[in-house]
Length: 330
Image (cartoon, rainbow, N blue to C red):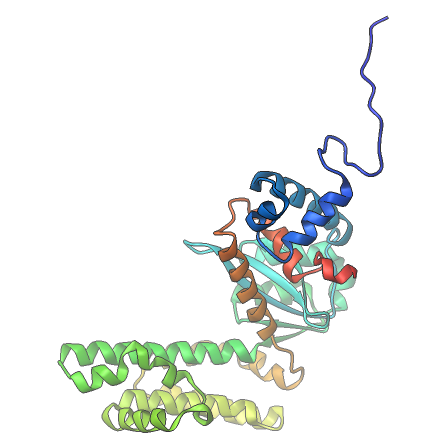
């Protein structure tokens, strides 16, 4: 009779693993507060071993907590870059629990479709609101699946878009000033001065107020751009949706009648998304939390000097910002 090798199933160790489940769990807890490299130094292990144990633990937890995808009533959808050359991850955040509950590579409508299909039609119908950054792909996917949800063009991203267009005007005027060799205007519109233009009026220092006043006297396009910015921000000071609608229509007229091409393009975009902007007055949901998580994700990427394994990076996002965070189990 031929001898056969028999193996025994042991509860406290994974099949084929070289470490106990308890030790792997401690590695996973440690990598939630520091880098794999630092955890390896502390435990006298190389990075590859830390990676294997951490990934195995995260995979096991992901099957328990992230499959099928968790549903939520109020969601925020945003993208974050994980690699240069426009490589993005789409993150879905539960704004009630303040946690990342799903992510996937890409930012097309088909990508977000995967989340809605994953939670099922019944859960899609229970979604009350979704805050977006105005991306047409996300809007199309949400309208297709979350038929009862109020889609909100987030105030944070709308303000961000205004600031980007204002900075575009500044860059154009800086370029003109350099061609005309107007050194005084070059100094006032230099990139070091851009924060002065992007700040709220009430947050300006005395020195910045003087500088800004001088800039507006010397350059009419920037003065117009600042007025358009302040006029748009005043929409969110309105008491109700009707007042906001009147203010938004007035702002669109001002933007289209201005001599600033960047604001013409922005006004055209805002006109198509006018109802989404006004929906903020029905449900004051914000995706500013998404930007907070994006900063945390970028910090996570910098700490590790990037991730070659995108699936592992997605798990690490859940570990630091979502349901796989060990602090939630304590």
